[in-house]
Image (cartoon, rainbow, N blue to C red):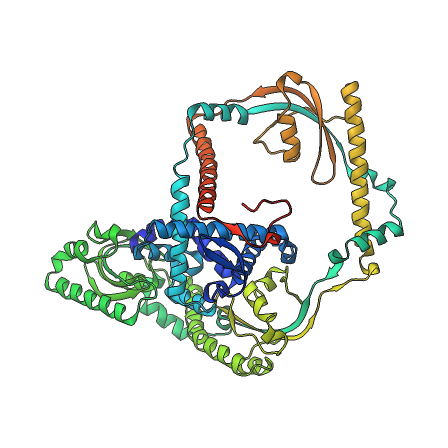
Length: 637
């Protein structure tokens, strides 16, 4: 596994990473640790009742994912009936897949689970799996390793079922030829645009118009619920910035570890790995360590049998097949404990037992090349940064625990914690429940922090939130000073906003009317006045025209050319397009054609997987028990 992750970490289970970890990191742990069977059911799948709390968690997950992709959009705007219905639809599909996986007796091996966990970027430090970081992130969100691994196994099961169906998609040659013909079709066009800005001077908006718009949409002009808060941030970066390393210690570190600080070369090494799974018990670790000791004893008795012992005992399947050989590598590739030992050994020398997050290793260096020491002056900044970070990490581990205990045991304010830990007590006058847009504040007030800050304990009892890990070795605790509920804003406060919106809508209407009138005139009496220069347009080309306009242009029958079409654009403009003629382009060389076929196959695979899941939903009798959860007009399928 160690070698597999090292070689393939850039592609190993990327879809699984997103599916399994991102919802958890954004939405906290509530949904995985609370009992979902409580409360009234909202839907059924295969006899299993879906509870309201489970749906609420799925909705929060979906909004969090959407907000991550749309950072400039207020998350409150995303909490719509359509989004809630989509979250329920996704939840029901997942449950149908879970029932199918159970009936098919799918089993995710421990090795596959280890690979999946090690591949998740949020659990990696400098591109490598960091077990300490993994435990810290799970603990900060109230997650037990066993619970997380159970959830991850479920996600892998779902992925196996869907991906298996998707890979079965097939594209016949006749269909691909027709797709090439459609995709490579080109139309020569000229465009005449009617833009709303040109009609703004003609627009007059009365006070009555503004008042009517305000009265009809009062909910849209409510100030959001927000809180005034104080907060403390304890971070590893801040601790490191305040640490000073004496010059003598920097030189001593350089002299003691030139292999780390001065070497620019590479080593070639072999290893024997006795793997330890993430979250292993003390008994499991002890058993693995005893086996490593047994192998090391055998190796010392027979030094020439390293390759044979690696093939027999090593649990890194890729390197074990090669007698433990890992090939050549430089600094920054292997985990820190492994690297330090490997670069400290002489050619042909064998280590003792070396522990990393992957388990216990026995390392033998089989080659050294290109090693050349850099002078201290060239390495001083790097040494100081590393030593400051190491010193801060030790201090952070201690202070993080003390900080967490202190803000919990002294819940009435944060002033005592600020004084004890020498932290600035910061104030934010407006913290919306939906979050903040500024990136530097959004990194502090994550969804988990917002959920805690607006909890009854923080709002009603005015207690500090617990110290919450927001990533990057940073803890945050918040004290709510005041909560201002959502309220309707007076008309005068939003008058300018309403008037601007009405003017733009009226100008867009005038632009469309003018464009439609010109289109009708051109169809009766063609002329070229006002059109831009001719240009070519295809389905796959980049163009300022909207997708709707491109579809209208490309769907005109060839026998009707030349002709005129019209389309409303996203910005309110109206485009009159003179479609002149048709032409085709070459589909490209064989490699380009193959690449496009793979893209189409991927799309077909997604469609096949969607149809498969829908079939499972039908088979397991998906039923929504509350019709109000469906979008208007949607069937209860």
